[in-house]
Length: 221
DNA sequence: TTGTGTTTTACGACCTCC
DNA sequence: GGAGGTCGTAAAACACAA
Image (tube, rainbow, N blue to C red):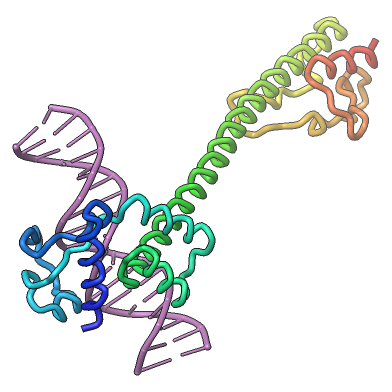
């Protein structure tokens, strides 16, 4: 039985330092398990569970600290380091190996959680940005609509209200989903000077609604 | 207390690497 | 084939509200 020597060592240590190895429970105090599970090889090796000499439980703070320090140095555990740690801590090398396995699993979970939070934050920021841009689009559509109405009003005034044909057809509706741009407006070439009421802005020039109106008015008058 | 949720320890099954 | 890894989970220990 491979664990006998370790168990005897721990029994000896726990006898000398009863406060240190709290995970070692003397045979008589072993509680029956709440749930059944397959018998482990160790339990089988030691005979029936009730004959198992020790139930090794929670590690002491000192043991935990040393294991944490060791884990901080290197997450993997080579054989020599495992044996050295086990000897230093008075633990079964198997316990050290299991502790590292579990510690790696916790570390991985934590890392995944952090990555998830990062992604969630960046997603939230994108959503906020999208909302902001959508409201900006709405605002611009409204400005465009107002500008178009203003142009139409001025055109009618210039014409003296004689023509029922509008020089600029109302192509913008705030309710529409399409988002027209200023460059989309075409100057019609059907002869009448007053029909060409919308002048194209210079290329690569951005104007908001008010600027665009002033630009058009300056050209007209 | 006790019921319940969370954390820790331990293990089996399976996989990969040498 | 064996050592050591991950993954999933049982069970004990622990924390804490009711």
